Amino acid sequence: MITWITLSTAAGKGLGPRLTIALWPLLVASAWDGFRAWGRWPGPGPVRAAIVVVGLALIAGSLVVELAVALPAWTSRVREDELALSAIRSDPRQVVVLNDDADMALVAADYFTRPVMFVDHPRRWRPLAWQLATSGEREFLALSRTPNTPTGMPPFHVEDERLVSRYHLQHFVR
Image: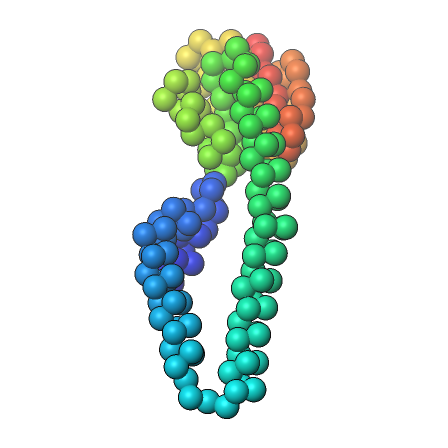
């Protein structure tokens, strides 16, 4: 149950793989002990052979799925995130505003060097714009995976909008 909960990606990248790494040696030792136990099992030869063949097929299938499907998809996603992060870091605007908490995983490293804000509901964009204007901000960058950020939030308006990999970057100015 704990592993299932920690594999959640609701806040960005899943935590489970990093948290369960310490358990992997125990899992390997347990699997090895299981293989040795099957080797000592005095059951009929054809049953033992079928169990070994099915076990090897499951291991081979797991490796194929991991190496041919999951790893290329993960590599592609990391490459897309790297492009978006480079675009965000090269942007001169100081304030970054997110509308999806999962995007925090992308800009988390920049959290301590520039203001990163989060708008959890569309009706909160206007109060945020007002607060940024009141605090003297002249511009900000909105980051979203979906193009649902309002384009006009007085006194700000969209000056530029572009798509970088799967992220929408909108530059708002007064």
